Structures are given as structure tokens and as C-alpha cells.
Image (cartoon, rainbow, N blue to C red):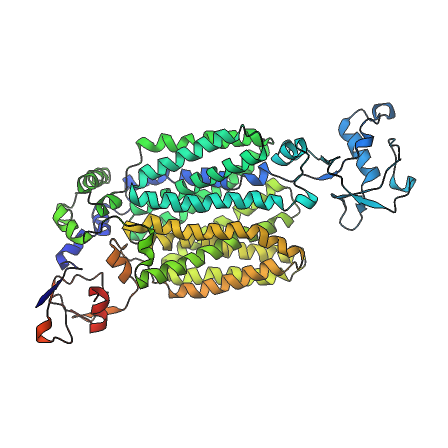
Length: 605
């Protein structure tokens, strides 16, 4: 009996691999540069939406309000300015910590029966008793930094303040936003592999635009929370698809530079957000500006093509050919007719059919790689946002602190570009993560000051680099039919840690070093585990599920002695005469030999 194994193709057919076609028409020519100048702008808008809540829910200085003093006549005492009158009331009713040089935010002196007059001080009455702020009275907010936030708008109006005993509720708002990230990365990542990159991008953009504009008119905190969830889902979905679409048009030699610089647009968005929030101190107007900026996505509709790599994977050869011919013409290259024909590519695709995220866990090697990447994403996201909180201890206002936090990411991105070119992916994945982890552990046990801030910035450097690198590596490891779904699933795991991280930070109130010790241990663990991932530097992107499964598996030795990936070699059709009892089959041609066990990994039972 003769068994035919058609998992691989003839060596001449390897030339039809998409990366080879890109090499023939220029891996990063004029056409790709034009695309690159437009698509990553989506990252700017995504970044501004991602951290806008830092300013829209900014916690200004606040103190207990003494409602019985509201009618006090400050004008008659020479204080015509309302703000000066409020400060006088604060000085008389709120305990002052001489060590930290701040007034208490949650307690006040018991001033029952005390009549306020300008110049009154705690020493003028019995100040031995303090009481908690009363919800019925509310709080006074310093509006010089934040004129109007959701905290001093919604929660004052409804007698519910996100300060003091209710401060943990702010963490819930951020967790719900990260839940939107989780849903968006999964839904739109899967949609991008099902209906295409471009339709998924504009579905996500539509969700983002509608939710952003609607949020301007939110009548309550509940509506605000729901709409922010959809903003997160749309923003994350659009950015994820944008990243995949951009990288799929770039050849292996330039993929690192492009992938890293897409991340740089995210950092640029954070800088622009700091400036925009500094100029616009009212959260509704800030949200309106973010919503209007989303229109940019739709203006790009007429310039962004569908991914030719995705179209090839779905058998839409004519559409892919049209796009590639336009690319070749713009790059002033000859279109490689011999590399692109439906017959050759069809044999390469192996009748893949529609794949979903389930395919990532169907085979053992792909399953292990996916779980490893999911854990890395889980940890890097948690540590990234955890370290970001340390910038608030720099002694500057929130706007400058946010700008500094964004600015320190640029050196890490520049480092990543050059380091990835010389040292490959695995060493950088592991090294940057371990660096961030060690810095976290050291930071946990240092007193506040210059040394603690400096070590925290070293950690931020490492984790920012790790975040940029994992985007690149994930896009290279997953095969084309499930690339967006793979990016969605791994990104989804990071959003789970985003939901958890605000509450993990709350545990620091019991033992301050705890959150950073957890960050450090998990970072070192994920950094070491990443060494088990395959090296993807200068490798062709896997274009089928078989290639994706074999990527990183044992090598076979060619007739000339060189090593080749089992599924990436061209082995033709193998015929086994099982009745003859062949025990050590070799490939029919091309001089590539392997063991029976390796062969069974490809051929199956």
C-alpha cells in the first residue's frame, strides 16, 4: 500500500513564499514607506485614549467640607476672593502634617459649635479630637490643576466621592477599561483573520468613534464606565489590527525596525496626551478632542489596502496580485511572475480552510508557544503599568510626570532596534524582562528619593523594551491564518493582568514592598521561560498551520550538511511502501534526511 504525504512542496515552489515575493519587489520600498507613514498614526490615538483617564479622573487636592461654615462672610473680613476664603477654612479645620507638609484629605477637627471667622486657627479651640469627613458634607477640591474631572463632577453631584473610604472605586474604573482591552483584542483579532484586516480595522474604529463621542454627553458615572469599556475595545482592536497589517507588508530584514517604531507612535501619543490635557482641563472637552481625532481612522480608508499576505492565505489570489503589482510599480521593481501563480500558492496553502483561535491550542508545539507568549504578555503588561505609578513620586505635577514617563520609553525603543539586529529575539526578550524584574525587587526595598526613582527608571527602560519586543516576536511566531487571532489571544492575557494590577497595588497598603516583589519575581520567571521560544530573527514568517507547528521543532540535516527546519524545507511528495516494512524513511528528493520520529511529527499517525 502506498501512502502519499502532501504536507510539503517541491523546492522550486518555495520561491512562492510571501517573504520571497516581498524581497523581489523590495522589502521596504517607497510603497511600504507611504503605508508606514499613515497606519501607525492609529497608535497615537490609541495611546491618548488608553491613558486619558489619568487626567479625566485625576484626583486633585481635597479636604473635608464644613457645611456649617458655608455662609461665613469672608468679604467683610477683607477676603473678597472665594478661593482665599476656602483656604482660610481649610487652615482652620484640617490637620496639617509638618513632616510631609500636606493637609489631611480624609479627617478634620471636630468643629461642632465653632463659628468661623477669617484668621481662625486650630489653636483657638479644642483641637484634640478629629473626625472622618462626612459624606453628607462632601469635600472641597482644588480646581487649579483639574478644573472638572469625573470625580469632582459626578461624585459631588450624587454625594458619592471617589476619595478616602471610596478611593478603591477608582481602581474599578481602570479595571473595567482593561476589560475592554481584553474583549477588543480577542474579538477584533479573531475578526481580522476571519473577514480581513481592513474590515476589522474599520469595525473597531466605528466602535471607538461612536463610544468616544457619546461619552462626551455621559449623564452619570455608570454610563461613563460602560462607554469607556467600548472605547477600550475599539482602540485596542484598531491598534492590534494596525500593527499586524503594517508588519505583513514588510520583509524580514526591516520587520524589527517597523515593529518597534509602531510602538514609538504609542509613546508619541502619550506625550501629546500630556500636552493636550495640560491645555484642556475639563474632562468633557478632552474626551471630545479624542473623539474627533478618531476621524483620522476613516480618512485612511481610501489609502490603506487589505493585507496581500492575508488574501493569499484565503485563496484570494487576484486581489493579492493587484496589490502586489501596485507595490512593485511604486517601488520601481519588476513583478516576479514566476513566483506568483495560483497553482503554486494553492499547493503551498494545503487547503487551510478557516482557522480560529482554537487552532492555536490544537497541536502541541503551537500550544506550548502560545501559552509561553500569553504568560509573557500577562507579566509585561502588569509590570509596565505598575512601574508607571512610580513616576508620580518625582515631585512634579501630573502633566510633567506623564510626559517624563512617556519620554523615557524612547531610549528603550532605540536600544531595541539595534539590539534585536545584533543579538536576536530570545536574548533580548529574556534580558530586558529580567532587567526589569531585578529593578523591581531593588525598588521595593528602597526609600523614596533619587536612588529609588533612578532604579525604577532602569526598570521602566527594561520593561518598555520588553513590551516593544514581544509585539514583534508574537507577530513573527504565529502563522498567517491565525496571526491576528494569536496576537489577540496573547494581548488578551495581558489585559487580564491589567484588570488585576490596580487591586494588586492596593495590597501595598499592608506591606509596601509587596506589589514590586510580585512584579520582580514574575518578570524574572517569564524572562527565563521566554528562552524556550524559537529564534525568529531573519526567518520567513510561517504561512501555514503546518509551518507554524513545525517552527522551532528539531532540524533535519540536508545533503550538504546544513540545518533546515523540518516544515520549512521543500521535500516534495513522500511515498512510503508500508507493506515493504520501511523502517527509516528518507525524503524522496532534495537530500534532506530525518529520523522516523521527526517524520511522524510532520506526517502524523
